[in-house]
Length: 340
Image (tube, helix red, strand yellow):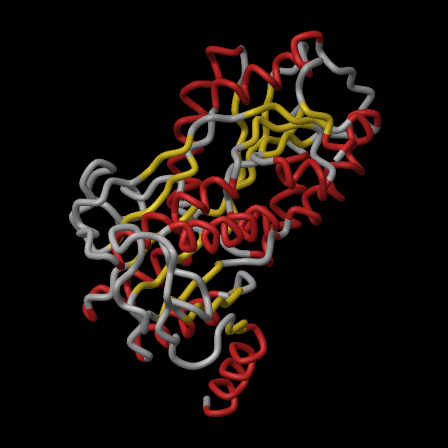
């Protein structure tokens, strides 16, 4: 057990990126006192659940949002950032470390990181601000979106399923079955699956789903899903599946089945054909600004959850060509990710 603890601790040490050293020096910001933090010795912990592009986009935005509120690393605060790499033990130990160090606020990126941080921090009274949590109420992080009434608040990435289903119908007019691979322990995925299953018949689709429990089951889950006669696969904001999307994409490519992503990085990096994508950098900016306001004295219990729903269509002609798909007329003004 001792060896295992040392191993985990070493992993945390190697993963941790301390973006500022020591206590923060007293700042002399040009902005007014109303818009700048009065306390300069502020310590912020940021935990990103797993290594994938959309979550890192959130982190990038969070740093910008904190700066907008006057919290700039190395000047008015110290930020410790940890990528949990999708390992539950790493995420749990990191959350506990943030609490033990007495950080002023913890920012958690993705639902699994948020629930872990909230469980660790609530008795210590440390506020938690989550980012990219699709259903914070279902995850037990908030009583309502309008007034969380807990020690956590933040931002929610609510997928635009109407736009996504419309896109799939346009790209694949003869398709009938949409496959969904999801993780049974991720509350956001369970609630998204229920919503998508309810909405799909309005677009002439049937949802076929396969649940997995962890990363070790993703390959078998993908094979099972592809054996059920699905015409395509649609991704949710499922952290386990997205973190192992290359496994799903390889299986789908071999079967000749296209995947529609839940955000643009899945199109750019993992072979998805198209997506109604959310702006995760913008989501992160809002998250950072919420955290800044709480650091200045706003009540985390009454700070509403900010929900982002606006999406924009993106596609890849390179990826579409693998499945003999053509660009529908209604999407000629959409963004071709190949040009970026």
